[in-house]
Amino acid sequence: MVYLDNSATTKIYTEAYEEMLPYLLAEYGNPSSKYYEKANNSKVAIELSRERVSKLLGCSIEEVIFTSGSTESNNMIIKGVADFYHHKGKHIITSAAEHPSVLETCEFLVEKGFDVTFLPTDCFGRIDPVQLEREITAETILVSLMWGNNELGSLNDMNAISEVCKKRNVFLHTDATQVIGKLEVDLEDYPGITFLSCSAHKFHGPKGVGCAYLKQDQYGILTPITPLFHGGGQEGNIRSGTLAVHNIVGMGKAASITNDNLQYAIKSLGENEIYLHDLLQTKFGESISFNSDVKDKIPGILNVQFKGVNNELLLKQLAPYVSASTGSACSASKPSHVLAAAGYTIDEIRSSIRFSLSSLTTQKELDVFKEL
Image 1 (cartoon, rainbow, N blue to C red):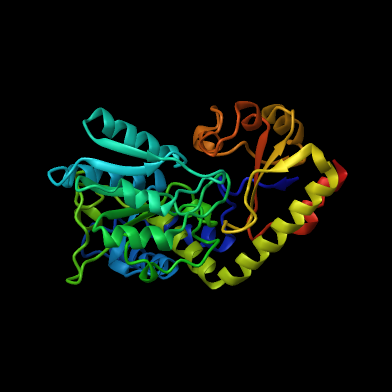
Image 2: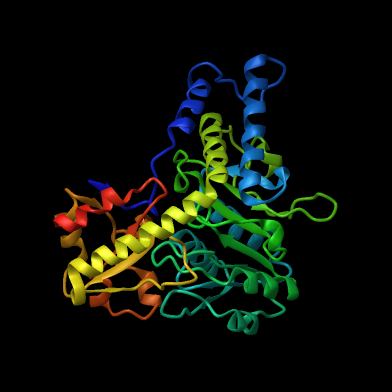
């Protein structure tokens, strides 16, 4: 059995799991408490994890706000900006190929009186930065565009998008869930990015934890937004709630391992993607076509169309040998809106499967396709 659904979730690093255990069994203090040792130890562990995550993202330690994952981060940022800055304008720009946690949040805001522009995409799910700039108006308060597409693997031109938003003085949020751990990300190189979302379980950390990046100004003040959660004022009054210390520790350790091994991971993912591409081409020939681009993409994601074969039935047949999916786990019951936005017909969409690798995937495991 080969696991090829790493865009949905990844296997936790053993070292991350082991580092988490003391904070479940012995060091269980609440980091928001004061004076006693267990609380202080938890607090120290949180800040070490924040430092590790900041190094992976290329940002300041203070700019990392822990959340339960990208879905919460996306909701918190988009709703938080909409509420805090609605007096400046009620226009938001996103794309038709975003993750459901972005699309449905924007649709919710439409019901609240906001004007949302859903940019079209090309056949690989990318937006045109020139069109983005044309759509920005005096009423635009936020642009929210994913860095790398979770179904096709295509990368938006974040350099160009960042420059457009900086030039037009508009906040830019990017859902970077799929690129963290698979590409080099240094937020100092993208001055136009104000907000970013990511999840630990996409780079071999635990589920249920992630972070939001909020950019500091020249005075060290985070870009203000309205909190999604109100309560105890944790995370600088941005995200209230008792911190899940064990999960945050696991995220920090996974971030550290990922950062240390990033070049190997990028190389391994690229080589194994080519290997899998060639295996599938040799095995299935003209019976398949590839929906993913061959360039400007996240390494390790292949979206493949098995012509005339229902993808759900095919996945069931493959299940004893290969773990894969039709696309986003967050909208698995629906035909892919990403492929629809990219211009595919409903029959083509219902014949398409996503294979997503991790740096732990081996070519020996991929050889299972030779036996099918």
